[in-house]
Image 1: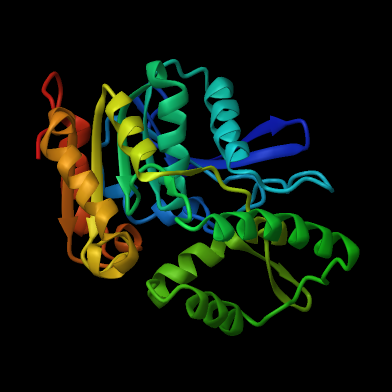
Image 2: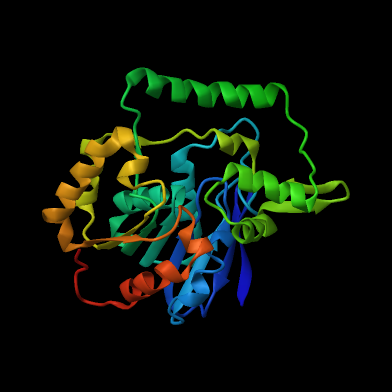
Length: 303
């Protein structure tokens, strides 16, 4: 069983759902890009019962308010969403768990507020977003954010209503790693029923976000700043394994070298069968690893 939460912000509210007793150890769960809090629906019931899990919807996602007119979605705004929520919850120290983009947000929060995070769990994420290696590609990505925002403002699109079947099919077409069951779970929170059909809740401006990119060298240095324990779970058929990153093999090698040296004292890296959405499609593949990590105390995680 879960309860719905709402946290007031200047432009509306940030929505969330919570499992467990509020006196339990706090764990904040962060979903991936264009997903919502339901991404944790099948995983959290398999995790330790003595924790209090809060899964939030980032602004413009799920049941959270869209950002004000004229405002793009900057990556640091999502980090600010986290800071607002934990302030409202009055949490001083807690565990962060993030999937995909949510993992990058969680990583950035840890770099900025290390004193507030006791453990970090990254699902199909390394805790940051890699910068395009080509300068022109980097410039193009920034220009795209501005042009996309102005285009949406000039001709605001009419929300498209779809039948439940068509809405699910569209979601699955855009997310090849999702199963039909997983897609249906996300759609429960990611769309609103209208007389004409289901309309996606997410803000179209979130499709093109302004990201905070880091170089390989910066990523390794940031990881070295983390003093508390980190669990990184990578899926064998996900987005982070070397064969899916042909142009970034040197980055994977740099991370492996870092893991084998100073980072192995507090970073645990686990590879599991499954896809990018393994935590939703096959939660039993990761629930045991996460549970052991959550319950371990006073010892450093090791590879």
